[in-house]
Length: 105
Length: 115
Image 1 (cartoon, helix red, strand yellow):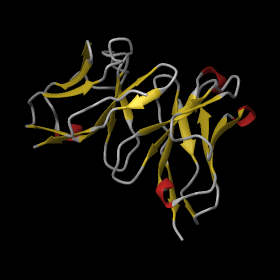
Image 2: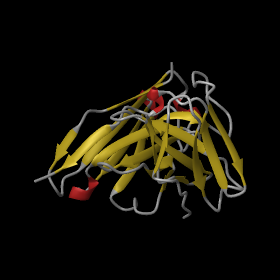
Image 3: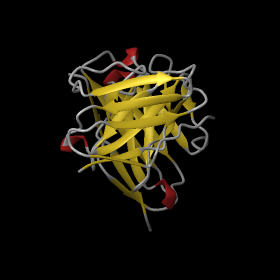
Image 4: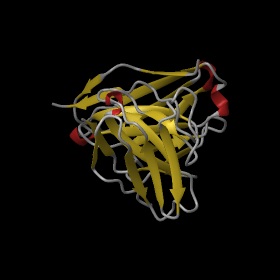
């Protein structure tokens, strides 16, 4: 099986840009997905297929992927964006990244 | 709207079994696979595997073979996760999540294993 590595934490001031990276050898061949998990809640999909945003997700969330790294960007972070974020990749089997705690203060 | 509703919290003794349900609504159940995901206390998300809702064929991740069984009842649009010979380290929140994209998710079922 393969692994997806994320930084443990990212801090950002309100209104600034937060970037969360996800590194994995399989990413050049597979899509990345991103999930937001607020404390005590189930995860919510915020980006799929590297860069697509589901309906209802604010435009400040965007995704990109290049080579072995995928990136989730929160442009103009809000206090309510404070959460854990996980990348995920799958074809016949799935794997989640190690998770990143985003603090907005 | 698409919704996954899971069964309630469980408290079990070591060695017992538990069966978690995930009832789907708002879409054709057999059109999407179902994933199962574990989250131990204070830990990250761990993909357990998925089940093909058309054929019933399960795929288990490494570390989730033997004691873990995925099953279906398509007549009631429900997927199940059964864990046997429970251990303390099985204490976790278990989630179901629809399809390749893994969205949406159920609300989670807390399984606590304690003597």
